[in-house]
Length: 255
Image: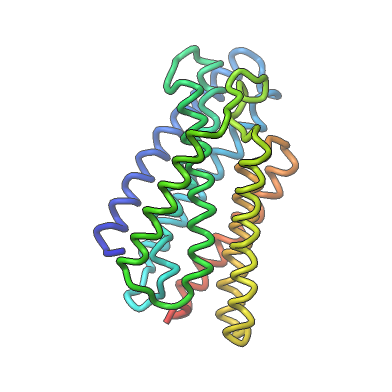
């Protein structure tokens, strides 16, 4: 992905982050007025932290991006954009508190399912394409992954009237959930294999560990509505993003 493409994706991500942050802050103020903080903080705060950690990571990695890095890093701008987009899951709660309709529950569910499944495909691609690959092939993989993700997201049943969905969009279909977990597990396995294939050098271990932490952390935060699991997921995601930023800044790890 060229320099212009990276900055375009970063700009779109920043716009989405600012809009969702506005909704989240407004929701927190409304929750305080309606005295229902205890019921909404566990949903809003993790998304707010998730949004800004993702934007900061995307910004820093865009700054530290090196021309000689490998194919896996070419997915990062699109990957962070999809992770950011997944936080539309809090819109039902905002709409419930504010009585302002931003998106219908159906479309919120589709965007949420699509962004999460596509991000898992991009994580898998990051593990598979450890070496330089033809940009055309990278574009083809991204297009096919996005098309499959969108198709499945539109086909999967969405329980928009469930009580849990009114607080936060969630994956209620066990088959779809199984697919996302399976793809995420495959992504983790590809990074484990990469460590052994590259003889376990320090740079490789840290780079692969950072991706694995981000995969597990992002999946936990995106899927779970449990405050404890969200806290664990955020800790893993922040640790992974921090490691990736540090190792990218310090070493030519994709050379």
